[in-house]
Length: 461
Picture 1 (cartoon, rainbow, N blue to C red):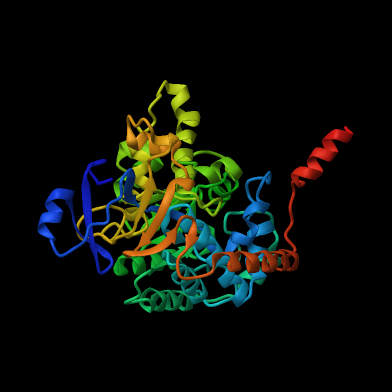
Picture 2 (cartoon, rainbow, N blue to C red; picture 1 turned 45 degrees about the vertical axis):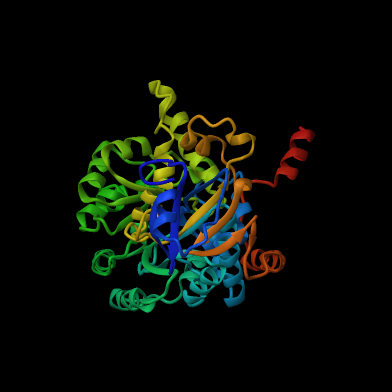
């Protein structure tokens, strides 16, 4: 699966973690007679998926969001992350990485943790798992930031955020973080602000400047929920994206998470400034107020990738959701039965996602010089036979069970659903133990009953 589409009878030469050559198999065999070809009949060699928006230390609570109202950050995620210690944060992050690798992701962009541990815990966990990570450092310095929003649980927020810091302190720490992982193969530092209101104007400007200078991204949840938009209008007389533009924060270094509630004028701001978006369709279905207009973004040339928001680490279900959400939200009303023509979602799950998270020059494509982050997908089963249009088939009918192998930086990391070189089942068992302890200690507040309780209540009525 090349940037020009699927090519049959093609080959790739991999060395030192990257693709050295890609082209017709016959020519590459002739040009490299000293190499023994590994033949892969009825397989697709395709770029690994890029998750442009994740929260890896929230994995113990992934199933707590079912049926919950949209703004659950302070009731669920802040207390949960605040209850993590070093071991549980490491296990939660590695659990998320394991699920992502099983689902065909070779890169994840973590939007930063509020756990009271060194962010290097997350770096170690993802590196040990063998996945590439764009590692966010939370740079909040305002007392009233609430992440994705939520109720006024100031105590929970203070407990997770720790003591107040000045903007100068936050920016000094951010600068050190951006330089900390020089030479690391799988860790790529970035900065993060939960929402615009979680940081002072000085810090918002400073993080954007530092990220731009370092060739990194700053991740900010923007225009995700109605409440957040309304709070910004009350406070600044501007919508969140408009406020960031007024501060000079919009630019190629910005990765705007969600951007579900955007006006035509805001789409123009994104297009004109070169800012990127993580389009998170599963999050919209599970807890959102809207679906980002991704087909319009594609038409306008707005940079965007696809993100899970930590919902489920399954790349094929993500690309299907990306197309499906557009069709239900926009395509049905306009008679658009294509909604991206299939290839759009594969492209933005790979090369477009890599570009959005600041790694466009490194990964996301099967091409000479790119990092060898790729999947081997078994196309011999009933899902792909007979085959008429491979990109569409991968979007609509591909599934995680077809992934034979996952390679990151040229190394085999996952084979037939099992991690290579470490004990995945042991990690899952430990996560099950720690997860219950952490959630109980956190005092998570849920609004919706469990499905079993809801069914019993319905039966009584």
